[in-house]
Amino acid sequence: MHFPSFTPILLIQLIHITALHGAKWTYSGQDGQQYWSKHYPYCGGPFQSPIDIESELLRFDPTLGPIEVQNYDLSPDEQLTLGNNGHSVQLSLPGKMYISSLPRRYTAAQLHLHWGSSSKPAGSEHLVNSRQYAAELHVVHFNSDKYPNMSMAVDKSDGLAVLGVLIEVGEFNPAFEQFLKFINGVKYRDQKVQIPGFNIRGLLPPRLDEYYRYDGSLTTPPCYPSVLWTLFRNPVTISRKQFVALATSLYSSHAQDSTPLPLNSNFRKPQAVDSRVVLVSFKEADESWISTGLLVPILVGSSLGIVLIVSLICCLLRQKRSGAPQDKNKGAGYNIGEKDEYGSRV
Ligand SMILES: [Zn+2]
Image: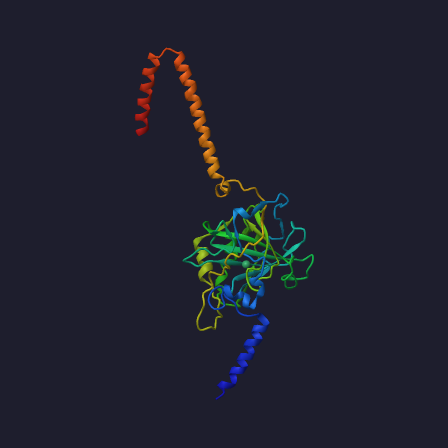
């Protein structure tokens, strides 16, 4: 008989929770990313992230110097909070860590990851020429010259700077192991554990001078277009075992929920680029010219060159022959030709 009286209370609690924490959202299903903009209008707006970084969008910017980070080497005495927020695994970072190479100081707040599933190791948010990597690390910083904390900065156009690292499956990564080894302590949503500090710089690729830069957004609701994105050109690796641990250990549901929901494939699909360009700190060497349509003219040009040189040599030889005694040379020429033919078959 008491049961019906619970329902309005539960409803009020639910409204209260929604008001406090915003509407619930997921990556797929009823509250999936195609519906985010219903409750979070910025998700349907301009300057959204991630994007597919295609060669045509790139513009070399010689003023983009190497990324410099300060106080990333944390002592094991320093305790960091590792948590499961139902959307990702997140590590809180101390306020002494910052990026020093941008016009403003950007102080670190947290890092988190996006990843695929154990059967589909493709879960990076940014794509490079349509290639999706296994996972992606985001180190989130806020503009501390202008704003006192993360929550004041999060919705400002110059509020945040995120360092993005593409992750592929390969060699074991000891730096990632520093927090992946504690992942079973945060299996369920809202669980937290304290872990010892380590060198966060070890999570970034060795080269911090090669990166893509563009203006974008948070890749999760409320999708504020407040992020100065730096995506490093070079990926890092984690082992298959490390990737599987990440992809299979966590749940987006609470420990007490009757149906556990695995937490994987937590990446947003690429968003419209619109009028944006992607600045690059490096000159694209290697195979970039293949995709920019220069391959055909280069091949045609070099073929024509070869034909021209061969014709010239033939012409010169013919001229020479016509002026020299012929019988000896003719015999020798045939013999060499025969030898070559046999030689090439071996
Ligand atoms: Zn992220």
